[in-house]
Image (cartoon, rainbow, N blue to C red; front, side):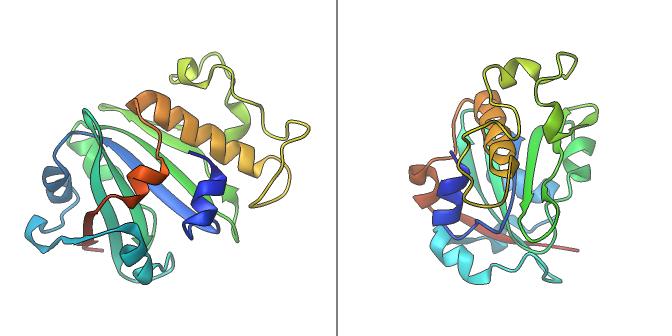
Amino acid sequence: MSAELLRERGLGWFFAATWIEGDDPAEIARLLRADPEDGMSCELAEAMRHLDPYALTELIWLGAHAPGWSHAVTIAGPPLRTAPLLAAGRKYVHVVWDGPGPGVHDLVHSDGVTEFRQPPARVHDPGWRLHEYAEGLLPPGHPGVFDVLAGGGERQCLDNWLTVAARLTGRALTEEALSAPRLLYRLPI
């Protein structure tokens, strides 16, 4: 998955997604304090009609991702709060891109016990817990990186975090995955 695909799907200026350990999206919805019965089945295009990252309501588009993993895309409100996932002992990877704001945020990830943050500029730090998933990635600001979303290495940083998430979960977020129906949940704020 690349930053270009996000831009094509209307997520080029803001994208927040969390890959969560677990095959049951309804169970994950409950962990996030959503009512699993209130989920609205829709494709991403329908969910995007509610896109508002600065809303006072929180909506996530949640569904299966790969064996052992589910995936949530924030549609409205702040990026998903990961505290309930950590409290439940779930592994997760959380990627945030805010084009009008600071750009790519630190990668937030959990081993199910502790939450960690990794700055984009330190993608090749050999002491990083997910270092094995970063092998071969281009450093931020690599010469010749064509940037669709922002200047310099911001797109490369986003692509790096998306690659780390794909390698960890065993599946990239593809056009096919973004076309499959999932459930849109309203989370309590």
